[in-house]
Image (cartoon, rainbow, N blue to C red):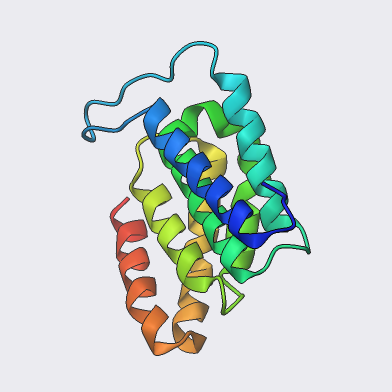
Length: 160
């Protein structure tokens, strides 16, 4: 995923997101299949690799967007397995709210994570509360195109 060629990195991140969805499909909110045994360690390694891409200085905006969406898919589908590692990615997602080039991707990921039943626990709830505070300030300064998404995320967080 850390390839120097942007297209290779983008495809690797798209594959990571597809793997997350395939390993543990979510058919409805009430019917969630368990993660197959033996996949916990590889999912955690994938999660850590994607977190490194988001936090690394070498990735451009497109690669970071794809990485954010991949993290969102991993959290949405394998959230319980990744609960001990929330402290790695959740602050990275929050930080991307302040970056204009990645703001829309971060908002989409936050909305998906807030809607997911797989993401729970005290750290997750504290993080969502901090994002709620951050959104209040973001609504004043974000672009018009992101303001609608920010309002949708705000509604999702309030309904959680």
